[in-house]
Structures are given as structure tokens and as C-alpha cells.
Length: 258
Ligand code: NI
Image (cartoon, rainbow, N blue to C red; front, top):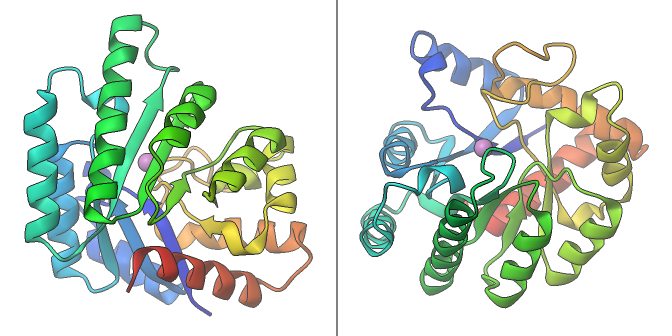
């Protein structure tokens, strides 16, 4: 069995003391590939460094919505472009998007939108897929994406919206990525999404160190725990874990390369 964790942040300080063990245990638990996503320029560089040092790791570079306020847009896009051009380990632009949960200020929301659109267009110009974060912002994300769609592919990371919204994103051609919340006891909507999402558009992720699945909820997440999410979705879809892991692994390879 092989599993692709399409969203994690393994440069996080919480792995400083046991990073090699985390990777070793991921591999022992069938996680063969991990996409590590930057959330600002420094962490994007850390993601690239990890990808250079571990053959199981691929890198994504990007600026997270709430990380953009102090930055100059043109300089940031140029830096991201150079990171992609100079490092073949970069397979995706992310984590980008809009976050209105942590941000209520209209001017700052407008700035998030500018960075989101510019990074979508960067992905288009580099022919790379994107990984998208949407929190309390799904309508705006949809409207922006509709007009700035990177043809190489779009991952809706940890999709947590309604079935109706999922249908709209699927119609655009997006992939739906599911993580730990699917395993939570009262997660009615994520479980419904897991049931209804077409297999050819489904990806698995951890968002480690965040969003740890049941029964480790509240503890630090790591790639090996993706097995709990795999098990839950396989059970919901009434199929074997082997088959589900293989289909979603190949979906990720198709999108991100090897
Ligand atoms: Ni993330």
C-alpha cells in the first residue's frame, strides 16, 4: 500500500527534535510521498530544503493569506518565481487563498485577494498546480478561481464546505482534499463530502502539525496519522483501504509529478 500526503508543514518547529523519526514512521506506515507547503517566503525555502534532503518530500511555495500584510506584492511574486525556476523540487504553488476567520478588516481582506490572484496567475505562467486554503471565504475563493483558473490543477485543501459548494468546485475541475476532520465524531458535513466526492477527484492529506485525526485529536499531527483518515473514508465509501490509497496516490502523482 502507498499513500500520498498532499498537504503538510514539516518545517514546523514542533518537529525540530524528532524529524527523522517522523519521516521514518511515515514510511513505515505506507506514506511514500509528502507535499510540504510553505506559508511565507522563509518557510517556502525550508520546504525546498526538505525536498532536497528527502526523496519522499516534494515542495510547494506560497504566501498564506494572513502572511501577506507586510509584504510588497511584486517583490514577493518575483521571489516565488525565482524559487520555482531555480529548484526543480517545487511542484506546486501553495498554501494560498483567503482566510476571513482570522481577518475581519476589509482593507486587509482586499490585500489577501490581491496576493491570491497574483499567485494564481504565477501558477498559470509556470504551469504549476495550486493548493488552496479557504476559511470563511468560500464564495470569494470560488469567484476569484473561476476567473483565474490555473489549468494545471487546483487542490481545495481540507475541504470543509457544503456539498453544493463542492459541486461548483468540481465543475471548475478542482480536486477535493480531505484530512483529519473526516474522523471527528460530529463531522457530519466532512463525512457527507467524503461519501459524495468522486474518486478521481479525491486526495488525502494531514495538514500536519494541525488537524490531527481522532483518536489523537489535540496532539501534534504527523503524516503517519493519515492512515486514520484513509480508514474512515474507505469505510464511508465502502471500499478497501488499499484501493482508496492507490487511487488517491495516483491522483496526486498525476497532479504533482513524482
Ligand atoms: Ni496548511
